[in-house]
Amino acid sequence: ASTSGFGGAATAPCPCGSDLGYAKCCGKLHKDAKAHADATAEQVVRARYSAYAKREVAFIIGSTHPLNKNFMSDIEHWKDTIKMNCYDNFELTSCEILDESYEGKGESEIAKVKFVATMTQVDSREKTAFMETSTFERAGKHIANGAWLYKDGLIETAPGMPEIKPEEFEE
Image (tube, rainbow, N blue to C red; front, side):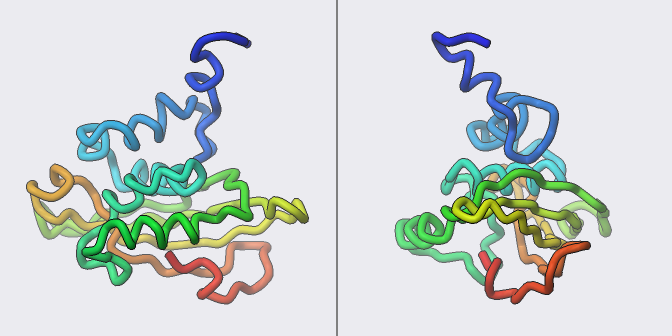
């Protein structure tokens, strides 16, 4: 492993759990609007998970549908809200995609992605997880270049985990 230059950052593993380095995986979507626009809904789920892990607040906001119940027109206030709730007490360790489906055609197409997000509590080292089925829609070519945007999600208890209270994981 390189001890100089940009080697460490370039080869850092991606928080989403893929075998790719962050720069070649979710980091690409975080930094490049065209990569986000060209991504599948599954790739956007992984990138949003990694955005929480890496505190990429701009991507979290930029990948949220304007009709999402948490969307705020006061972007600065929204950024502050996300920073306060960005899982600071957790290390996000894996995003396992369970199912991805698409229905409809063209601008009315809807994507659903079911995944398990795994994390470790920083102080206790206790592992926890939740399962979510996220719904994605596009908001037209003029918003995020027609990319898949997070509209809403249904949070459930992950297999093998204790029952969760939904308010623990609301975005």
